[in-house]
Amino acid sequence: MTIRSEVAWRKAANCTLLADRTMDENARKILTIVRNSWIGVANESEVLGAIDTEAVLLIMDETMAVQSTTTPLTPN
Figure (cartoon, rainbow, N blue to C red):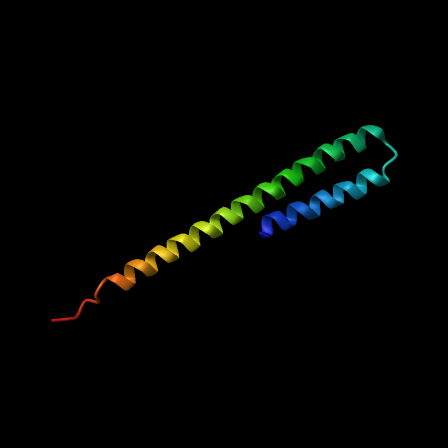
């Protein structure tokens, strides 16, 4: 879980709490919409974080493979 997704999940939870506590139906609707938006941000952040992590691991694997097949340069 990325920091961005953690923040978004917390904000979504806060919106849920506020929506549950309010007596104003319009405020509840708005808070529900905002909560759903934060959930979207959290999910997107988690997916992008996983993609970034996977990309870094692939690049590291490729770098290691190249390094193991090349001979080190020796100074003259």
